[in-house]
Length: 374
Ligand code: MG
Image (cartoon, rainbow, N blue to C red; front, side, top):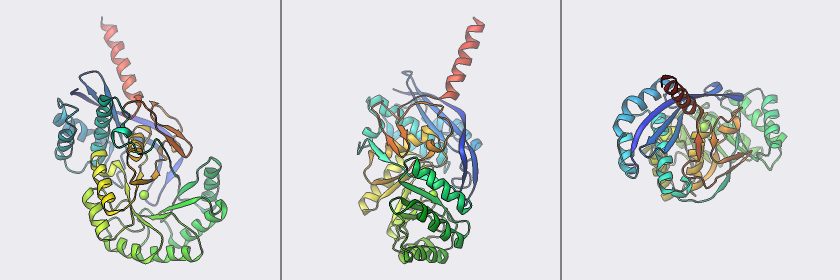
């Protein structure tokens, strides 16, 4: 099975409510989708969101990296030479991790299809079902409380609370949500780099002293503030999760060895796909550090690739894969099942997505013009 063709298209999916973090506000998922076709007629699908404020990737840069750099360097390669394909993918262009991730997952999709197995089983097959949290956007306290209660009503038992806008008010946000949802709901706090190290320690200690339990606090300080991450991690009891601070396996080693985080958040858009994410899993495992799997504002293709990785590797003990739950519609056919907080894998070979609108429409338009000509 050889790589014959790589196509790029766009998806546009409205969100249920605007997604707000300390870094940005987004109202639709407008992502690049990639189809890697094999000479056998099989296709693998991938997706990349333009998360410019985190990865630096835009729709234009993703499209250009795929079409002008990655596609020419891996076309014609045998899908069974997965290692060779991945080495080319990562060496043909620097950075551009979202573009790499989209092609990487499409190649893994094809590779698992060539094995006749769902991807999570090819990656280790640790479990066939797991639980995700749901993100609560940063807003006024009343709105965050009502969003949290709605999520709990929908069956979510873990909430990821976005904060990091105003440090004192963040304490009030978390306290009000804890008060409303009660002690049984797990709270993950994501400051998205919004605090200083001293603020972070003060906020987390205050919450700890109030008896407010938190599953973790994510990226309290700036991505590049290594000393700040070390300081916060050493000064509080709550687990600190590194997100924007860790893109590569090298970042993971530095953070873990420097005790600058207790947990690592893996996102395919930061690592450049599954191949590098597996290296972070192996590093974390050897240090006895647990990982979370996260996503950007991604729809079901990219989130499902991440879901397969999470279901494949036991070192991933936490999941923040709420992308599909935030989307108003599901334009794809197939893939794992997203049932509220539960993500359920199935036995379809590959990632499991069997139809992606951008390509189907284009194909039928091409077929039409073809038949019009004859
Ligand atoms: Mg985060």
